[in-house]
View 1 (cartoon, rainbow, N blue to C red):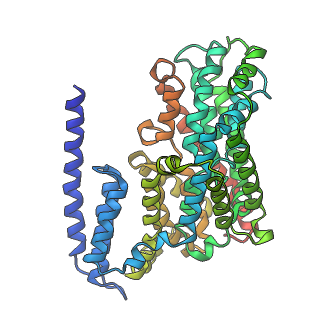
View 2 (view 1 turned 30 degrees about the vertical axis):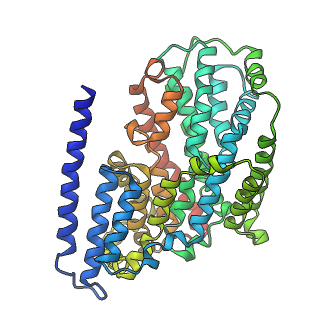
View 3 (view 1 turned 135 degrees about the vertical axis):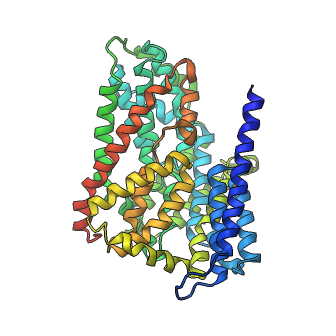
Length: 473
C-alpha cells in the first residue's frame, strides 16, 4: 500500500515536471514584450525561472539540484554571466548566514540549548498554564542566541512531552496540543522578530536592494517589528491558554526539573565556550550601528572561535552545516542580480504599477499581501514562498512609496503559518518529538493556524502608525 502511494506521488510529480518544461519553453520562446531593454534572452531567463519555481513547489528532486540546472540554463541559453548567477555567494549575506549556521551547530551539539531550556522552565509555576507560558517565553528568550528554529524545536519538544506526562494531561487532549503550540510560539514565531533567530531572517533581507539591506541592523529590525511582536506574543498566548485550556491537571513535582538538570551534569567545556561566544555575538549584533562592527564580521568572528577551539570538529563541519540549504540560499540571493542583468526587474516593476494604484492604503496593502501569502503558503514550502513573494512584492511597495522592508517582513511573518503540517518541517519535528499520533491530535492544530493568520494581520496593522512615524510610509 505504501509503495503504491509512493509510486502515485512520484507519477504526479513527473506530470508536473512535464508541465514545468512545457511552461518554461513556451515562455522562453514567447514574443518579447514591448518594453525597453527586454530581449529574447530576458524571456529565456524568465522561462528557466518559471521552470525552477514549479520544481521548487513539486520537488521531484532536491532544491539545490534545481538551482544547478537553472544556473546552467541561464549561462548556456540566456547568456547570463557566471558572476551574476553566483553573485549571491560573494555577498555579505551568504557569509553571514554560513557563520550564523555554524554558531548554531556548535550550540546545539554542545548540549547548551537543552540546559538553558530546562533552566528557564524552572522559573514558572508548575501548572499547565504556567508551563505553557514558560515554553512560549523560554523559546522567545533563547531565540536570539540560537540561529536555528529547527534545532530549538528538536531539542525543546521532548521537554513538552515530559511536562505533559508529569501534568498527567490526557493523551490527544487539548492540553498537549496547547503545550506544543506554546512551544511553537516561542521557538518559531520569534524567528521573525529577531533577525538572527533563524537563517531565513538574513536570507529574506538579502533579497532586498543593497541600500535597504544596509539600513537593517539587528536592532533596527527588532525595533521596527516590535509592535507586531507584542501583539503576537500576547494575543496568541492568550488564545492558546483559552482555546486549549485544561481543567483537571496535576502540578509538576518540585524534583522534576531538578532531576532533569541533574541528568545533564555540570557544564562541559564546549557548553562554556558556546555560552561565551553566543553572548558576545548577541551584544555585538545589538551594538552594530554604534560601534560600526558589522553583523557579518561578528558572525565570522564567532564561527572562527568555535572552529579554532574545536567546539565544531571536522565531522560536525561536514554533517551539521546544512550545506544543501546554504547552496540553495546562495543561489537565490543572486536571482535579483540575474533578473536585473536582463532588465526583468524593471519590467516587473512596470507591471506592478496598476496594482499599486489600488493599494495606496497601507492597511489594505498589508491585508491583501497577507491573504495572498497565506494562499501561496498552503501549496509551497516556506523558503520558496518567501523568495517568490518578496521578489515580486517589494517593487510594489517601492512604487507605493513604502520602505521595501515592509513587504519583506509581512511576507516573512505570513510564511510561518503551519497547517497543513506537511508543509512545515519544524512542526513535524515538534509533533514527532512531543509524542506523535499517540499524544497529539493534529485536527486540533487547525484552529491555532487560523488564529495565527488573524492575529498576524492585526500585529502588522499595529505597526503601521509606528512605520509612519519612522518615515517608512
